[in-house]
Image 1 (cartoon, rainbow, N blue to C red):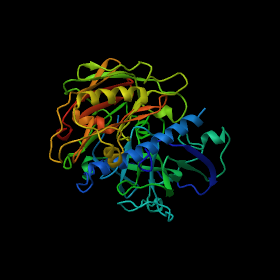
Image 2 (cartoon, one colour):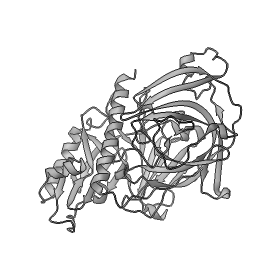
Image 3 (cartoon, rainbow, N blue to C red):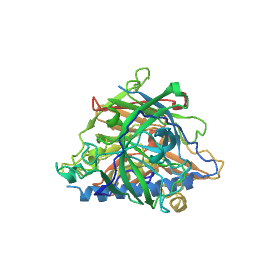
Image 4 (cartoon, rainbow, N blue to C red):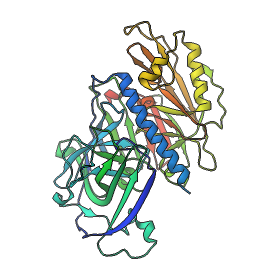
Length: 445
């Protein structure tokens, strides 16, 4: 996911560079922690920042698409103060260096800023990881199956000491990375509750630009590709339960491996993943078949083809932990917008768009006025319904009450953002190719 704030890459420029290879690779374990929302940040500022980041990510996806032919890990996650991201705290190297990274189901690469770092690196809240100070770091061989340079080599023997370097370009920034292998440590700060995993392939960034973040030091991709943490751990499933944005005290939980389940949860529904296109970056996304949307008991007039994945790889609907606000193709969005307008007697306001960046905002009589009661919104998937309470699709900011969704051009990928995933226990069963979910009070899990 993006800067650490974007998740989809526009381009990957690969080069082969000769350097001395380090030989060590050791156990690693990652700890996840949750960042509390900053009470000084208004909802409108939060939404503006999140939308700006989301649109950068979306633009990056569009450009990329147009140019493209048994371990269990448990940890709390946190919400970034301004960007609407869920961060995981993990540790890298030996001795382990803790850092926070965006947990992103919409990308594959694991990367962090590394020392020495040029003046172009962005500020981060934790010390830079220095591979030369770690006894378990190794440069990833260029002919490794996880090397970004393997395709460029086309089966030929790499030069001695070859290091794979590339530039990852996002909608709002870029990072220059070389690939290494390290031990990552997951779990709590207590050694007995930690899991160390050696030999994880990751990107070590010595220069970045265009990123605006003060909370994350990198990104952990949880997508479907071979470089994601899910694939490298070899886990058949993972789950998370995201606490609400308004909850500044609780932690969310991300589980990777056998402990990820919804067996004891009521109201469980499951829907199959749709096979992803073979081309990057679409190949990393978790596509779902969204067949319709209802507001209350009213089914909206949305053609079944409006959100379906086309044979040419365009369109479709994905679930993404790294995007904040749900993004719908314009045909579907206009139906949702009209249905909301029909139920609300409050005046709409152009000031809402300027303040939040959202398209539809209503003006409450005062900042202390309660918004009107709204019915739930139901997302109809193949064989399953996801019911969203009003708090998961409407957003309150002082005297503004806004639809927490945005539109985009028909034919682009539509996205279920993390704002709509609040208080929903979600299980990605990559082995069975299904998404299972149930409403939950995530602060108690």
